[in-house]
Length: 301
Image 1 (cartoon, rainbow, N blue to C red):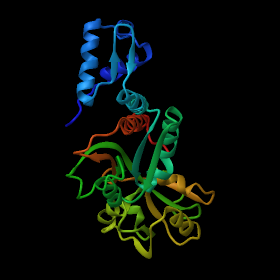
Image 2: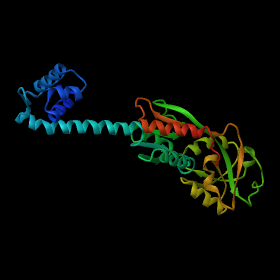
Image 3: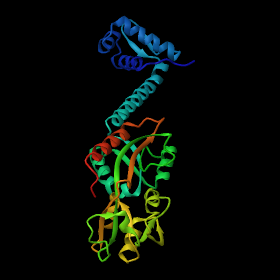
């Protein structure tokens, strides 16, 4: 038989145990004495045993009542703790949020946003995965990430997406390169340049291949995954590279310059992506709102 015991009945039982008087206990529970008696009867019926002995002067616990006191106290303690815990989650005093982001965002723009969120909600744990676009989406599919900041791709139909920003491209070269003193670079001026590529799996590379095919750039054969490696190769005079604006913090070096590329069609759109069938927790929703707010302030490197 399933017991149908409410917190109100448990509170009435504990109050009668403290007062040992029906009238006083009813008064403290803000009900009439007859209504209070009915509550105790319902509890005893649910417990399957008498919990109190009554006579004209005294109210005492039965042996079963003595056993039930500790049960009732533990139940009330657990319920109060559960609601207190839930209040902490609702108020973002506790919780966990996971975010997957492209390395260019995870290493540059995103850390100050996470730091601000952590300062506002120090009890919330923020987990960060820095990964290429496909891996970001896999983290969402597997439920390991609540939010992903990534580039468009062929596998986005199953997700909810919204724009984060548009990321224009820059030429990065050494200060002694023939194009280093240009204020803006046109695509055709890249002809004859030795190009260092990012790996084909990256969102950057997917945007560049179509644009550069007719230009006549020289393929150096250098194709790497990490921006720090690209910077080292350029600094050593092994070529130039085209990179999005949000990655320029990786190229702050006295011997390197970054020049905007005049190519309106070459802009890397970035998106906020989340699972379509899964609601965000209050903690995750708070981080999403902060990301949206800060994205409206701009992404200047």
